[in-house]
Image (cartoon, rainbow, N blue to C red; front, side):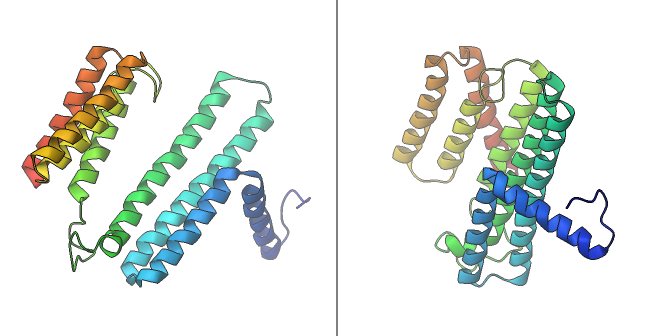
Length: 235
């Protein structure tokens, strides 16, 4: 629309629609989100989800699309105000992108809660939406570990989100997953294999010189102990 301010409700709606269409046309990630939303809705229809489950799915989709729209608007505004590179302009874009990431993680969790017992019925037959989802404690453990890693990295102020810093996020998540596998009672062979895999993930951070030995060890202990503690209290 060429007008600065729409003169009617219809024009306002048209402006909003044009904004959505422009975002979908110009932003690759927005197209990915729309495709993912389409797939999720089709899966929901396939499994005949309940009304409450569909509400969770619809809210998750709306949350991600809304966050991506706001992120795009902020990026355009920053480019308009600061066409030349400026550290604060980059920081605004990073924070906006972080909002999309948080919304996406929340959407994955809500989608899992709504669809887990449809997609994985063998894990817990007859699972209701108000009961604990299969693997719910393992998922919560990983989320808690990730949040603690983010807070510790922010506290120590060293490294970047995926490169360096105290503690190693890769080691923390790897050992959190390994601990959940061990506590699930899968047997000694699979348990040892999961620990070996977590150790290899941690070792790779050392070989690539991304983390120090102390950062890797702290990350591994953090992931294992937090997960063990959550299982001990809530399992």
